[in-house]
Length: 170
Image (cartoon, rainbow, N blue to C red; front, side, top):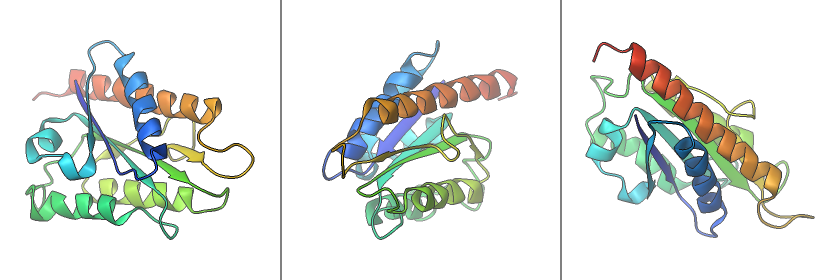
């Protein structure tokens, strides 16, 4: 099954989480994983994927503008809507934010809401809504626990995508 992991990152923190998601997904038999920045994703990348995992830094307690534009492009550039071409594909999210209460869960939920609006099947890994990391404070950057959570998200996405693909008549 094909899994697209895509993200926006300026500082490299969200990119590190994306790489951990990829590592987790690749550990599942049969997974073909593509890692791309949101601005580089093509319609073919998106539409051929069985699962899409989207990562964003927290900007003003929400997804970054680049990630929002990526979702807007689903309709206006990639032609996903009104036919719901992402229907029954697996979706998941991860986020990074500087502070403990910076809006990571809100960011995860807005990403998942965009996926739900496209009739995707959303999953989480170890966390309630996906994977997240706090990048400032006592432990600068991303710690081992947060990277493990991102890997677990990748594993879960790949496992669920494999189950859905096996059960799908297409």
